[in-house]
Length: 131
Image 1 (cartoon, rainbow, N blue to C red):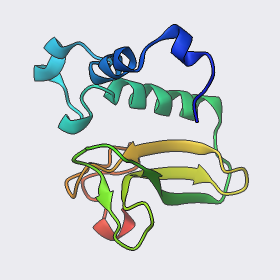
Image 2 (cartoon, rainbow, N blue to C red):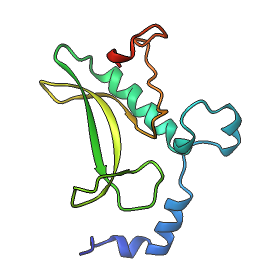
Image 3 (spheres, rainbow, N blue to C red):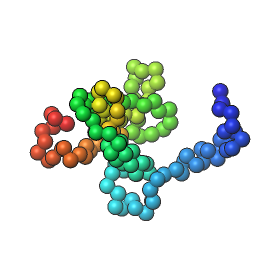
């Protein structure tokens, strides 16, 4: 159950070490960071993906807001516990998609009950039922 070629290039210990320290932001920019604290190391990638998704395509009609649960087997504080599923731990993302094509236009990772929805369409006087 292995993929040929990977063993010749990198050992498992080296791969795990790289994954442990992989982040896409300078650690010294933590005092000025505005996003969710738990996503500090990968937040620039999430923002870049959202910007690229929004510039490549403009959804027409039939926009859907959906949640997506991605299987997660590691340890992470933002994982969701679903006791009735075969795989009990998942990461929840909230997604804005076009229904006809299924194009993902925008997404955010659900971190906890305090997850902030940031959009130019949401103002301080927007009723909570519309969120």
